[in-house]
Every structure is written in C-alpha cells, then in structure tokens.
Length: 466
View 1 (cartoon, rainbow, N blue to C red):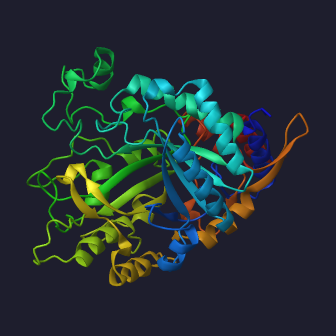
View 2: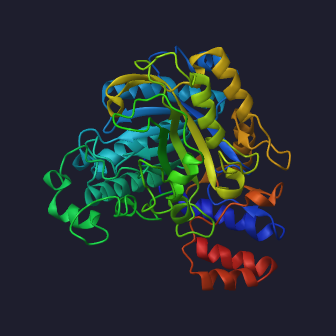
View 3: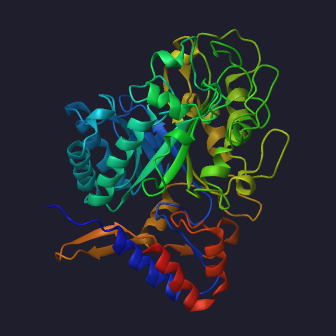
C-alpha cells in the first residue's frame, strides 16, 4: 500500500531529540553516518561466493557494507540477485550499497519505473535492510550509457530520489562521481561528437568553447541538496602512463591530492580540478554531505608480471596506507581523521576483473588475493586513531549504531514501520561531530542560531529542519 513520505516524521523525532539533548552533544543529520570515524565495506563478485557468510569467514573481519551492481529498471536476473543477497546482508545486520545503473538509458527512469524500484527496496527494508542507493555512478565519465548527459542525469536522479523518499525510510541516496583526473576522458574522441549542444553548454563551465580538465567535472551533474544524502567518488590507483597497466607504487599522497585537486607529477597535472571534499563534504563547505569512497583499490595487472619490484603486497599496502591512514600526516599520506573527517565510508573493490582502461588486462584488485596481503590489510584497518579510538568501523559497530537510530514511525493511516531516524547523537569524541548536512541556512543564519543557547537554540534548529 502506498504510504506518505516519512521524512517529516523523522525530522520531528530529530527535533524532540535535539530539544532534549544537552548542549555540545553531536547531532547526526543522516542516520547511516557513524558516530565516530567511518565504515569499512567491500565490493565482491557475487558469482564467486555462495553466501555472505562464506565471504565473512574467509575475510576474518566483518565488513559493514556490501556492494551490489544491478540495472534499473530491474531485469529478472538482477531482481534475483537482490532477492538472494540483500536479505543475507540484513540478517547479518549490515548495510547494502546498491549501485543502480540506468543501463537502458536515462529516459527509462520514469516516475513509474522509479516507484516500482522503490517499492522493491521498501520490501527489503521490511526485512531489516539498511541501504545506500548509488544511482548512475561515475556519470561524469563516457563509458556508461548514462555518462556525460548532465540535464538528463539530474532529472533521472531526482526522479529516483523522490521515489525512494516516498516509499522508503531505511534507504538513502548516494551521488558518486569518477575522480576528475583526465576529464572528460576523451580517449581520442571529440566530446562534441557525442554530447548534445545543450549538454555541451552545461559542461563548458568556464565558457571557453571546449571541454577540458579546466572545466568543473562534478558540478554540472549535481542533482541538488534536496535529492542527495551522501556524496562519493570512485578512486583507484592505476599505472602511470597509457594504457595505465603498470604495476607501480602510488605516488605520495595521491589519494587525498586527487580528491583535493592538488595532484601533480612529471606526467599529469590535476591542479585545475576543484577540491571535491571541500565543496561537497567538508563541514565548512558548500554542501556538507557525508562522503563515501564506494570503490577503491590498487591495480595489480596479472598480464604484467615480470618478477621485478615492487611486489603485489608493496603496491597494495602503499595504497591502503593512504586510503585508511589515521596515524598522523606522513610524506606518503595525510591523516584522514584530520583532513577528511566527514569521509564516512570506504569500500575496497575486492574483485578480479578485466579493465578496459588497462588494455583489457585482467586486474586483481583484491586485498584477499593471498593470505599475506589479506592479513596485512585486516591488520591495518584495525589501527586506532591518535585518541586510541577505533576509527575504521566494521559490522559490530554498525549493529550498535543502527540500534540507536532505529525507531517505529506510525503514519497518519495508522500503519507502523521500523525506520532509521536522524536523532542519533554521541558526545564520545567531539572531533567527529557530524555537520548539519541538510540545512541550507546561510552563514549569517547559522551564526544567529548558534548564538542562541539551550532549548531555544534547539527549537530554532528544528524550525530549519522542518
């Protein structure tokens, strides 16, 4: 049965929590955001593993999230995959990241199609599933049917987001780009030959009549704060020169420098890129959304095994020591707890697959490729931060967190549902206070609200939320 959107009801619950909270307590505006640190997830090949439990047993740690790639509208095969996997993830108490790919074109994402998909997601919620819906990922690239069509993409994303908000209360929308290095990724093709004139104008953000890395590779595709709950970026370490299939160590601070738009070497210059984190995720930025790295890994090309240094362990270790560093700034990596405190999910691409951007070679991205690499990875993500706290949170912490943000919501029709409310709060570590991601108040308004103390300040904040 169709039900009204519960979003406003969550916000009412949030208001009650804020109004009765002590001053200084952190207030999470998104119930899937951890109290402290970030979740650790994986993307695995579902044709390889018989069950989620089988994977967990070999992994020897319990990932928070599992990624599932499907097409929307759903075909029979992908519906079967979701029906098999999502309940298993829910039974463990974890989170599903569903990469909803508009494979049949953006025009196929009609209101009816989006609502059909949202009702299926609602069904998984009734089984206890918590989900991020990553719609049309890497839309700024040209390798997918939905790529580099900003006007059509934004409309489709908004349609899907509206449907999810209408039917779901445990699922949230993730907007995730490809890292902007090399944009618009022409590979020798003139972008004007396949981009419409109207979209070309949108993509030509500096108005110089051409589309290059001097144009913003992210902003033309952003659907708007009202439709986006999380932001993200796919960011891998590839080789250094075309076809990018060399097994080489990543350059120092490559991970953060690519995100911040400061990466420059003798062979690439990405310094024209905007600072993605600052614009979309930083607490003092424009959008203030929790950030995910829903795909990452370090290339190991099985067709390029010459026996020369570096080893696979060295290449992958050097990358995850950047992606998961919370042990202080080093020459190799910045401390993410300091420089990216609103990075809230990192998912390792634990798969082996052919990569078109690496000359169609077979690339082994897996941390689980061998017991030595596996053990080193599991040990490193267990590193505690400078305050002695666990930073990279796994399934036990997620289960505890979900228990604190779960609430029963009763609709006007009298029907009840188990939802995730945005009233989670924690004063355990002030360093990781969640930004007020969904409040579009100006700095002047924010200052005014913050200057009012106690209960009055909380109530004013509620007025902004509702």
